[in-house]
Structure formats: structure tokens, C-alpha cells
Length: 182
Image (cartoon, rainbow, N blue to C red):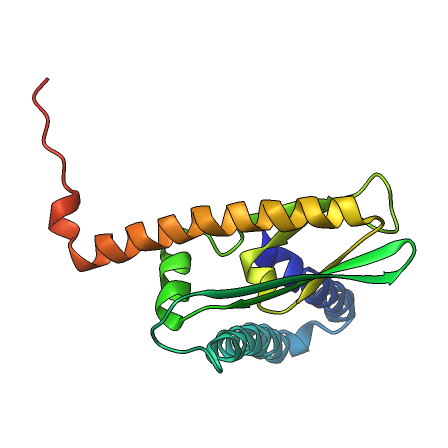
């Protein structure tokens, strides 16, 4: 779903361009083969661009990540002003742990949920993948910030155990087989 949201706008633009080309071709039918070739080149270039930008984003994730070591987490609450508190979140992860998270599908695991500071009815979710780019979350009071900090710690501890399970599975997959007689 995330990928579709990412390319939704450009796909709509391509659709509108295609619709315009369709109407133009209905008036100029002799140009059809060249137009089809042009459309294939444009659409192919678009998807190639999207693939290359995804590869670059993945490479940026790995910049500065150590290969081995523990996950380091620094959490700090700062009062910006009377009605705004900020939870600073700094998670330093290793490449090996990030690969394990990707293998288990936990990159979008929610660390905590919180009320949007500007819209009362909206809930936001702070995930592991988001923590690599966005390093803070804002709250309207200190109690909510402290609750989110505690929830983040619990979630990270649970994720750590899943990472360890994945490391064990990768290291010794044969030991993960269960035999039962029923």
C-alpha cells in the first residue's frame, strides 16, 4: 500500500497524459505506432526512475550503520513550551539487525501511538522505519510524552527478542524444525 501511495500522483499524471494522447490520436490516426512507442518509453522510464530512487533510499539507510554491535537507544523528553513536549528518539541499529527486521517484516512495527498535536481526533503511529528519518514526536502534555516513552521502550524490547529469534533462525535453520506425532 505504501508503494501505491508513493506513485499515485505520477500514475494519475500518466493517466491524464494518456487520455489526452488518446483524444489527439482519434484525430490523427497515422501517428499511432510512434505514439505507442513514446508511451512505452515514458512509462518505462518512470518505473526505472522509481526503482532507482528506491535503491538510493535503501543505500542511505545503511550509511553510518555499523555491521555488528548492540542497538543503542537514546530517549529524551524536552519541553518546547507550555503546551508542547517533544520526545527525542535516537535509535542506532546495525546492518545485521536491520536485515533481520526486514526479513521478519517488522520495519513498520509501531513503537507507540499518540494523538496528533494539532488534530484531536487523529492518531499517529511512530514506527521503526520512521525512526530512521524522523527523530522526534510532539505531544501536548508531558504525561502523554512519558507514556509514549515507556511504550517505546517496551516495544523495542519486544522487537529485540524478535531480532534475536531471526538471528538464531538464520544461523541454525535446521534446529527450527518441529516433528510431531499426532
